[in-house]
Image (cartoon, rainbow, N blue to C red; front, side, top):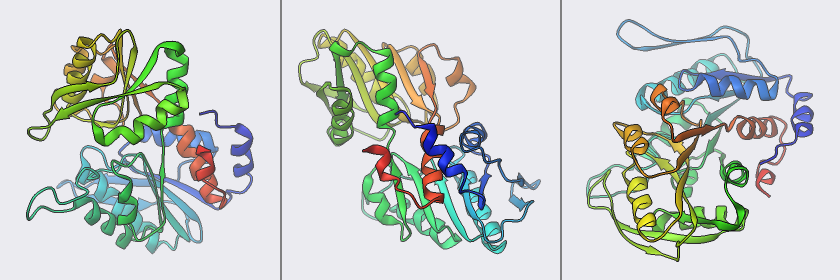
Length: 327
């Protein structure tokens, strides 16, 4: 997505009372957002006591200001969630006028419903914790399930990475031979939206998941023969689904397979699994700070969401439309 600098400059003239506070989850992204907005990160200490208890101290005045906390709740999820909650409490007690939690990756989003008897709905619990801590507004990216917005009793903006992914696809892949593929039936809406942006056809991988973290590809819906296939999803964790889907697409005649995923969780042996797979490339965003293993992988590439998040923050601060970013 081409974010126009003119918009950003118009925001900068009006953000005298904006503060950006970064937790420890993704400092490079926070610094990139800060540079985009031309607003320095506020001085703050977010550290640990010897027993790993979180300690926060805001080291400049935030009274009456519009404060944005930049913090993904990625691994270690619980530590980063506690940082977010304690930063919020510190800001609330320091009389910040409004607190917006900017959470590029919202952890616990995959626990959005009761999957079994006596199972929790952890996404709702975390939403309650964030609101009760004192957050006034949430800004996030590509929630695993759109209905999680309704779990919050405060205004919540769910941004979409599709414009950024579409721009990268147009720059790197042949336009006349592309086909967008949803790795499961549940992701069809997301895949169709991206296919529309890049004027490509749509295919679906029909799979059966026998247990968490494992999947068995059953069938390909659509003719992928001779196509450059682009698997699209919100989260890649173990990488098993992507690897299986890529193998199935190639077995059905696909020319090559790419994957464009918003959140690169990539836990356990996922990076090694992707690196040794038949995927031509896995493209992820920096919503989660990439590890050294991710940076070293020959077929994993990271693109930045700093301009998207920065523009949304600027528009929120100036009470401008955020949804018009995606028109």
